[in-house]
Length: 394
Image 1 (cartoon, rainbow, N blue to C red):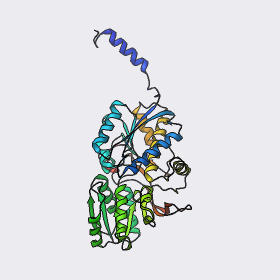
Image 2 (cartoon, one colour):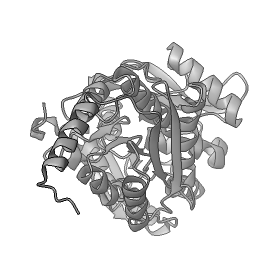
Image 3 (tube, helix red, strand yellow):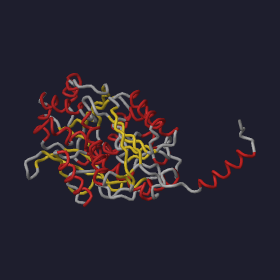
Image 4 (cartoon, rainbow, N blue to C red):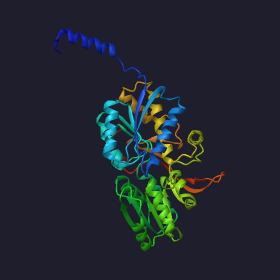
């Protein structure tokens, strides 16, 4: 047996290094896609997945010119399951990118697997405040919006509308806390109540009784997926919509909510960074192709899944397929050389987006369908986040 110190081994190693030379282009791109695809909140993950896969399909089954192998898995709305799936994708499947997670608590449990292995995580939704500030990481890119941002825009809108008292409700996890912190950052009136519910809760009778007693001008909730569907139905069913306004973040009044709730959504105001009617070529193509492929209108979640795929596509193309060069890939991701469906888009130094946020209202389109329509100029233009100054990255 030859040892590592033998002349033969040393010569062979030197020859191997000389032959290796610069990083060669890969023969395909491997993406681990982990999302919530079952249970009451499945519609969110399904929209992200469908839009991501649509982008790959429209690119001829490729990302950056290389064949794309997208491995889709269901985290079942469980942090431990997501962690196991991340570990499988990274250690066994040796993926080049991870993406897909909807909820911040699930992502925060799983994403260290990506960071430890220097695998890029491209977030199509969850973008919690810790990763925007002191815990920012070169392998994390948020293609959605900082957890606070929709709610900051909602708080500013509530101030603009002159509401004096607003009651706040959100689930008790990181994104819920970020959401209400963001709303309060820009709302200048009185908080009539602030309640954190169990994540995944579907019965809000106790909370609605407290709302009725508080008599606010408006109620603002952060309740994604099935939580929001049930709350809105129960809010309207309790007759509270006659006495106070219901304010929502964009995903709280989007297509995944509109479809099951129906006409009770008419006239609901919400704030978002994207809408069906944004007048840019990339968005028109996306909306048309998504509806053609899936026979439904896309949601905010879908728009983010689509952009996540386009960001990966742009980076792989920029490095000419040499995805083993992590520094080059990171520079390419930060450059964000793709046409976003939201229009103007760029990354801040913490790799969270700088973008516009709009006021939308639920109405009917020319075909009589319930949809969100943008109203006037953006509430915020080129808006970043409140934590970037705490991030040490350049």
